[in-house]
Image (cartoon, rainbow, N blue to C red; front, side, top):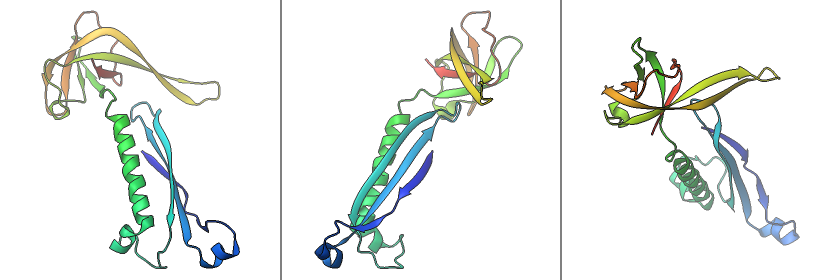
Length: 183
């Protein structure tokens, strides 16, 4: 996840003489949030969050102070941060968990980096996503996956590793760094 602050501008609502001399200062806060898939590097979420609020904060005020947090501007920032966290959570909670194949045995079974602590149990079924990497015409590295039809059965589960085997043989060219996805 990456955040980029786009603006913290202070200004008056309009340029009239009265507003410039007696009007309240406003301040804008604007930031972008980007979330990337940790396996593929693909962007899975991006959004700009922006809001303006009254700026009546004295120079030198600590942004961690109760005064700042209770100000209109501090509450606007807190509201935006809460909204962004809710949006990111809603995006990633629906994603199917992925595990990477970390060891392949001669008999066709293999280990993945997901186990008991990830709520995997011996009845969990998976599909395999074969990963392919290539260079495009501009010499940029690209990655893609293709889903194999074979269902994978969980044989043994350890704390952070599980042993899987294909439900039918022969296995479809299973390799280290391929992914498995819960069925």
